[in-house]
Image 1 (tube, rainbow, N blue to C red):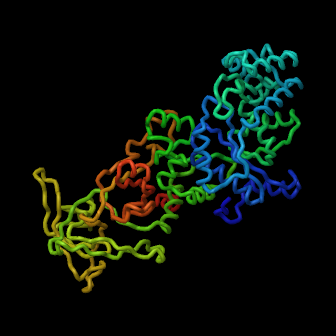
Image 2 (cartoon, rainbow, N blue to C red):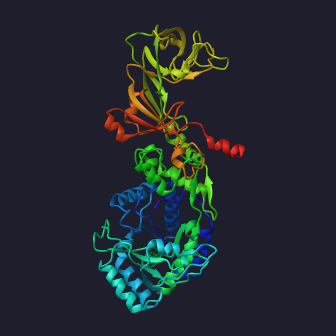
Image 3 (tube, rainbow, N blue to C red):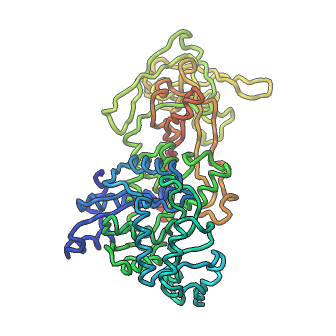
Length: 555
């Protein structure tokens, strides 16, 4: 486990655990777990729970399990198990025990039998639709199943036959016998087991009945000796059922504590919605760099340190709220500003021919790798008679406050020389194809010995020595801050802009994560670079700091 990014963290969960340790509760030990269902990839919301569970265990010299709550064979796959393991490790954590709810299927069955024999569970022949109809509403009590008072022996025999595969999927369920008039809908005789003739990714066809999440989850916590079951706020209404199962079974009883889940602007964190985006092809996959999945953030270039820092900054609260995406961007920008080397890349190239520069000369110019860290040193950048600049850095008829290159104007090429535009070359359609310039040899390094000043410095690359690259400019996946039910219609059409003919410094071919000077932070997409046989870079985040503006203006 990694050290916490924030000194002396404090929140209501940590305070509760500290009180438990002082009182000697749970033999003064702490054992947490991160229990994802392997039916999709982890996202940034899961990162909050991962950090909380693993860091609390570390802070208290306790244990943390990685448990897969794999009780639904229809939606779960081994692919998701492997992806989850990879994401947790990438985020910087190592679990003490790797567990699966499916490891406990026999024990869960035995506990269900105990409830049956104690008159606390019964086999119900109602269809799922009939169960929903009889459940009642928030203002009206539910109706008792006509099978609610079956004798325990009959329920036991029926449950054994369910396990033996004698009944069709969905034809019978095992339900807890609690209170159909309870004000908490979760306590109205919830289903404990359902029949599903489906192959499980670990147990194959051994089972055709599977425990429901609410039952399997709390009993798995108990079996593993978990002391504090930390979960998001939507499970608060399920806590009475969590407690009921454990109390009725008379087994080890962890304490469930709920905290606010993470909501973040301009994206969705519902697994159902993320699956829809993937399956309908709105994104290229779970690891699409626009996705809020950890695999997507990793491919985009986010670091585990930035995500842990983000989770530490938002803290642990009791009320749900929405965090601005700008804070996540601030966290990666803050890290990369200090750690990322600087390079030059031209995304929309316009060629310049420096007419008084020697035609065959390739000069090496000293460039600073990172002004924030002198230890990162300097690099050599090739300079030549022909260079590329950004097309947006030139205007033939500039407005008053445009200080970049224009006819007759002198500007600085970063680290190199002062140049002056002398001519504009156009094609038959009037499009600018090339600029002719002159340079001042005395200004090498970017300063003039006679003290004259220029108002603009441009980045550039050598035309013959630069490499062609593809650059992908990623933006928010959604055009609205809080996507609604019709979220597909709210996708941002400009969430991805692909520039296929960019030019980059030759050294960038081997650099993974860096800043393109004046443009933003980028990382090499190793997968697509290999497929396309040329460098492909993903924009991680822009240089502009929206979060600083939000903090300054208050929103």
